[in-house]
Picture 1 (cartoon, rainbow, N blue to C red):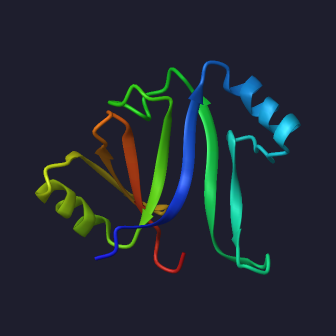
Picture 2: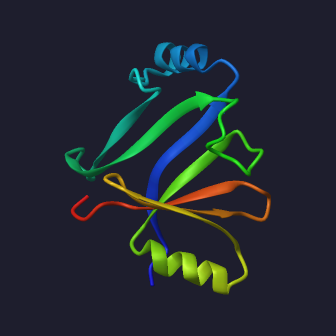
Picture 3: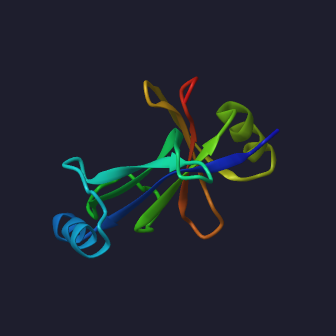
Amino acid sequence: MKRVTGIGGIFFSANDPVALRAWYRQHLGIDVQEWGGTAFTWTDGAGNPTTGTTIWSIGAADGKHFAPSKSTFMVNYRVEDLAALLQALRDEGCNVLEKTDDSEYGKFGWVMDPEGNKVELWQAPAGQ
């Protein structure tokens, strides 16, 4: 079974997300959208767009999205079979969170790494 196949997103929190988004926009040229982030389109070796994006987003530090982690970031990893991977992680003794989510954006599950960081696992919808 393949486990992680890529990075689906990078999410982090900030005490002043509006100001931090503006800094990234001004100094690094990131096209931050009204929703607080951007979607980087994947390209092939020649620079031609391919199917897939990586989300980059800044949220408020007072949010609960990363709980129970105390970390200010969370990486979203793409996986091919979320249910099978979550079961394998449970069988290996990992701290898999019970909550999962299934929406039009795909299937999501979470595991805590040994340092207490919440790791998001994402199975994209079919065809993406």
